[in-house]
Length: 446
Image (tube, rainbow, N blue to C red; front, side):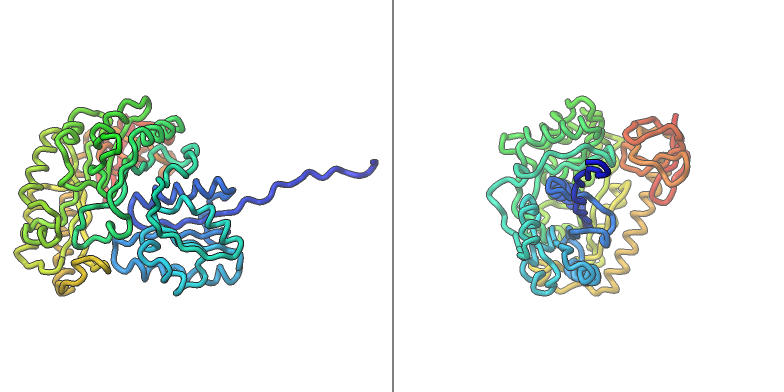
């Protein structure tokens, strides 16, 4: 008909998802998988909570006052919910697992509470939330959540990816809540891990970090250990770098140590927490190894890979820690010589055995932490300064803050800023280190 134009049907606007991630690399991985699951439901990512149709807080229960931090953040979301009653708010992760119904009771603005073993059900929970239902799912399901997650999309943001291979913990360290929030140790089948890794590489990933609460406790249902898995991953064409974290000293087996010397793809960096240098405190922590056993293990690792950079975790002020116990920790740190490390003042986690014990006086714990961190900082700076003048391999991850600059990671996991106007994310280049900065290196492309 003359004068009439045909209207083109318009596609509905996609819903937007904002995820805030707390805690460790495993939570980063979980957030990515939740985003992918919701992507299959038509959601797209946004970096603004006030622009979102759903806000998801993926929580961590390891650090002090994790619950209080969550409820504080939820409180800050009240104005957004008031302005947009259709906004859906979800809480995921370990605090969700630990708190469950209490989150809904204290914060009625929350629509969804989902634990770390149940987030494959998030899309169905979101649909129920759209119908006005409020749901809590903190079960440890019999099915494997990874079987129900969608294929991972193209790696469009970075050339390095996380890949969970093992979850949960059977060690029951006296200070740790992980066995209660993540469950017992479970390892994924090797063939599924290899298939996921292959797809990541085909989509542009050059480096994969294998994740687990005790990743070197990996024992797949097909009988594979972590060393065999790493060797199989090293055969994937295009996968240039392999890392794994976090490890327990008691699971550092001979074949895995040997792999550090055999495989150029396995990067010369190892995070191996010890927590204390005092045998008395290690026993109280239920670590099930001595300081000397840890030191002998470091010797074996360095014999296999002499240039390896060691990282660790330390807790000071654990209940019952004396000046002598702390001095033993300082001695161990001096003996090992860490390239980087993480140290914390003990904080009680509800439900753990150590939470029932009398704490060390706060001022004493604070002073010990400052002394330990000063030593660790000195060691880190020395390790970085030793890199000046060396040529390192750097994987570019993104443009730097300065024009014509790229930022990436060295073999040793140092952040490196490089003047390279022609570089692009995914390049692996030789870089001469020219300076050491506070927490990074500066270099020039060779």
